[in-house]
Length: 444
Image (tube, rainbow, N blue to C red; front, side):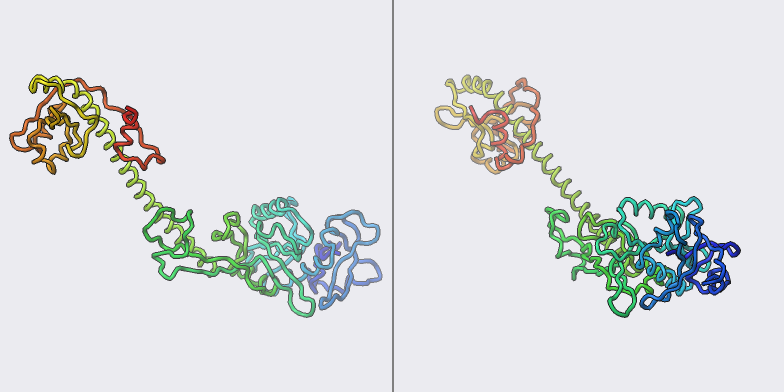
């Protein structure tokens, strides 16, 4: 069964309309003595007008005469459910003040709309497609793209229970009631339900690692709204809303699962604006997080730099102390007449300098750390300080007790060592242990 045919004199006719869409009466072609000059637009085979009642429907349609060839128009019109749905879609579009035509094809035949609804001013065309047969996601997306390329909006309607393509194109699922009642749109339309933290400046619901790992500062609420399926709505109201442009196909941006992003749903403007508010809030939250992460990265980098500089300073101190041991021993031998004893490492009691003993008593300190001398000044005042450079000598002298000896011994020092950052698993070591490990001093 098909709705549209070609009359030999009047041209294209639509038998679902009382005036056939051309100002003529059905009686002029229904059960006439001589067959009316009606042919199929697809195969040019003879057609005749049929009238039946089905439930609440008063059906007028065209049927191919006997022995008709294989015809795409016949296949497109097969099935009572498909037939009735096309009737409903055209009827509801016309009730909304739009014109509606069946089986409208593109000039190049790249698409053919079940029902082409056109606004009164002609600025909008919407293909209302009754898709009752199975179809792959790839095919229905390709057909949707062809409509879009022709500047034709489209909505796919189906009563199938399993619809793998429902999320991939602008579409809805419909259901016919068992008894009396209008056809309902049961899936494909959605409403946005917003949810916000009571204090939007401090999000208390989102604690996932992805949203704020290691951030102690309060983060603004990015919103926790969702897109549940809308309550069922009568098909006539839904089609009227499409015509009025109060419901539109929209790719969801707020979803619970990442792979749901881009899902197609029919939504109204207020719900779109509620989602937009959450999208903006989420973007602001992300900006705040990025700023906090940037601060943390700078702080961590500054800390690493300070640690490296500190390690480099300790490594250089160890080099100076090691280089001065031999000349200090020789100088003290000439002064005291006996060979002194030198400690293995610097100690806090001697301002991290290496103590030198004569006859078991402290006599000198090799390269003490100038900043540590002040707290130990009175106890270290009797001792001789040794430095490896004029700069170091001046720094030590500025902190030493008045009149305390600070000797400079020039020695050739090796290039400053390259300090490798301590691996994270070794961060539990003290700085001294880390330096000793790098120079192998812990094995001496």
